[in-house]
Image 1 (tube, rainbow, N blue to C red):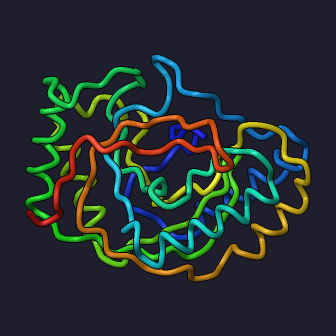
Image 2 (tube, rainbow, N blue to C red; image 1 turned 30 degrees about the horizontal axis):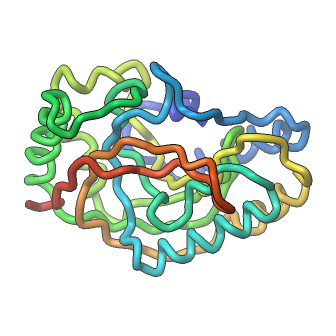
Length: 243
């Protein structure tokens, strides 16, 4: 689901109210089979070069998200399992539209990395907690809250340091939720009511915490084959928070 469709409000990261709104919006669409369906990335579309925060791949939160992703997929069917280990991420900022060829040494990528380094030098590691699941019109989403102000500070300072390179999200306002998507819907959901009930049962449950010590500049790769298809961030640069 495109983040832009969330229509974020101005101001800081907000409470579970927004996640409740997303659930209420998504339930009738999922129930009627009118949910959004993702497609492989196309030039000028979604899944561009982005800045993300990824929980440690060997940490308990990543393992818990991976297990829940598999459980959700068993109910919902063959969708992209974005929440599996190594794929789960919190997006800080998308930087451009999708393009298939990205050279880590090209000028734009070097500028993005330099802006990340300047922003990261003024903050520390970011602590987050995943507090439950929700539905959106296009995803099963894990709801996250920051346990300190470092993720928010990094997001704001990154925008400032990017300067003209911050153009891509300027029309959407400031992101107002932190989240990790477990599934991106790509096809029909065979038992929508079962999925809705399963998500409802997991709406308010602490799934674990994580400390994220680096921000990552990534591009996304579509991996359609195998038992767990996904869109996975491919690392272009890693910048320690607090470097």
